Length: 444
Image 1 (cartoon, helix red, strand yellow):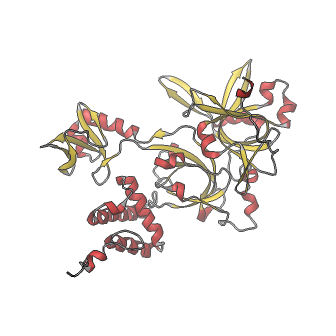
Image 2: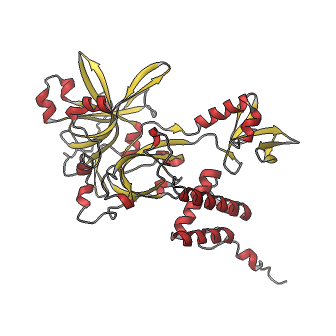
């Protein structure tokens, strides 16, 4: 018996270099050619798209015609966004600069969508489904049926089980929908990373550099970054119609943690010394976020915003950069009920100006509170000498990115910082002695 050989059309369905069906590759190739992009970048853009919109991490497990439809959706949406002057493609555009901090708390980016879906469905179920935003599960013959604005269809979920991504509203089981009408996960954890820089094409332009909030989701919400190290990332600029409070937010595709390129090649060699954070973070001609330690109360008053929660007003201080000499530090964790990870760390900063101005210890130094996210994701207690981590000790000079808070004590306004990032340079630190048992337990 002759050995069976698959027909040619079967062999040509999958492209060897991308692992995607030829119909998908043909579409991506034409788009890459038209936009003068590299096919590998466009292919990754497609993988990011289906991972975000359809939670598909393995394209090889999907049908060819489905993948082709997804490619069509991405390319149509990409062309629409690009021509409309909005957020750009799913691959984003190159931004250059450096990470300067990480938000202490992660948040469920879809909690508000779930709340809205429950409200809309409870008020008017028909209108909610017709909007294309909400899907409604009903029981069919042994399986759940999903009702959307495109009609009713069978699902693979048995009525003996709870359909994936569903939740209860007004006694019924509903779900969020993607633009293609498929159930979307009801939860997506996100965290803001702070990035000082600009689009690569504008980096050397006047007033181009600014402090951005980089919205990272999924696994990227807990990615480790190098604070103060020049790098290139891909991100989507805010839409021109974004609300005022979100014009500094850059969107990202899933997987940005694997695409950070630490490099200085985006500026000429003669300019690279200016990328040193001790210059870039403190240059008020580049941005308005630097404040000296002795000016933190003034910076709080001029830059804070007022908000109302449950009828009570509060103030949130601005995110700033400052520089100081480390008076004390505690790199050992303490329990904290207010921190997301239940741990907090601390250091205090001072300067000759503060020492000269005040005799009160509370006014002679600024306490800097470091949460578990900053500690775990940015390594705030070391300087980097190449790839080597060098722990620093008291009397080191460091830069801090943090949010100012002010408390009133004995008639004085005393500032402190909720730290998001710390940068230490090996030439500006005193090296900490390491080794031995430094825990308090040795004395118990």
